[in-house]
Length: 253
Image (cartoon, rainbow, N blue to C red; front, side):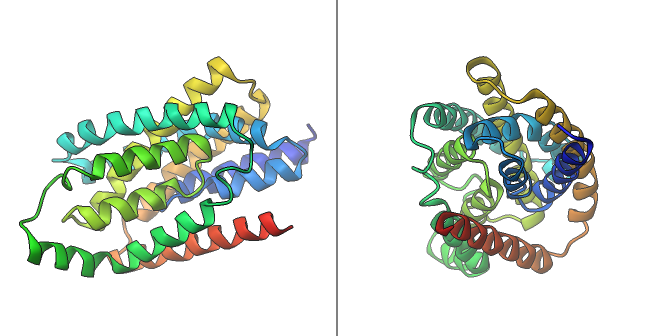
């Protein structure tokens, strides 16, 4: 690894940590860089997942004020995220590389639609039934599915989580974003532990991404907490659609 390659990975890690704290889809900063530098897709995915875990923790800590009063949700959804991450990691090590990548852009696009429609969906749900503080019986299964997706590929799992919880919880977007950061950390940390035991990561890459993501996660959390709900929603949709377009372009080429 040359010095400029190391610098490129470090900077990509910083960008990924920052965008993960605010929105999600930071993998789309680091994954293309690793592929461009010649790392195989599975090695890039594994190394990236391990490296981004510390940055996810930094982002979650940065949103600790918005986590107050959400202990029940953390316990309820955290276990499902963990199980989903283990399932996703197992799939990554056993399925062909392009199985999930064909549906990832569709999932991201649907997530963006849900985020745009979240206020109207919440108002409609309140008219039909009393608000459920924990989202009802189906939301944990959606969180599990997001954990499977995050453990397998990770790109834009934050956007998927925000869309699911935003459409199900009668809650402020910033508090949902704080919850998303913790669940994303659980998925990334679980997948990281899984890959350390059962896979063969590129450790220099892991170290560079980890260092960059910690810095980026801290900065991103400080910035993201100041955004108004509308601005945050617009940013999420823009990043999500950009991620979907990039994945489609990569698949075509």
